[in-house]
Every structure is written in C-alpha cells, then in structure tokens.
Image (tube, rainbow, N blue to C red):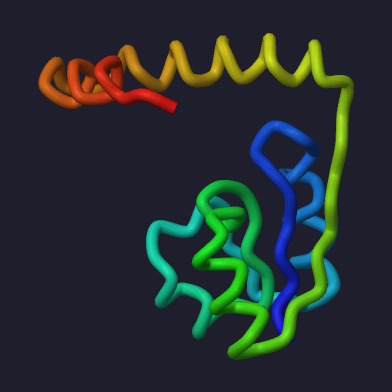
Length: 102
C-alpha cells in the first residue's frame, strides 16, 4: 500500500514529517514514477497527475490524504512560490513555461 498526499503548499511539509515519524519512507515532489517503488508515501505535484494516480493505485493500492486550506491564501502563496521559482530558471526554460497554455 502507498500513501499519497495532497497538493503543494497545503501543509504537506508537516504531513511528510508526521509520516516519517511513523516510519514511512516519504518523498515530496517526486521526479519520476520509479520513486513509488522505493517509498511508502508520495506527496505534492506531480503525484496528482491522473496517470500516476491510476498506476500507483492499481499497482499498490493507495490511501489518499487530502489536505486543504483557504483557496485565496493558497493561490496567493502559489503565485509567490512559483514566481520565486521562475527567477532561478534559465531564460530558455522561462520562455517555454510562459508559452504553455493550461
């Protein structure tokens, strides 16, 4: 069984600390699906990509912990977080991200 956590900036750092305290091998913002094999708990994006969810649940069975917070506060913090993150990217990557359409 795997434990999957919620989106970034919703208390997942604290959740990760608790899961580690309980003895679960925990990774935040896993870079690839292969990390699921070596960890008991996966938190943050891209855990919530639908293909990951389906594969992890089908392969291991999964329990989901959904953390929440006030949407306006969360969106404000996301804007600050991602703006700061973009400052450290090379210009070519920034251009690629700015051209993405969601």
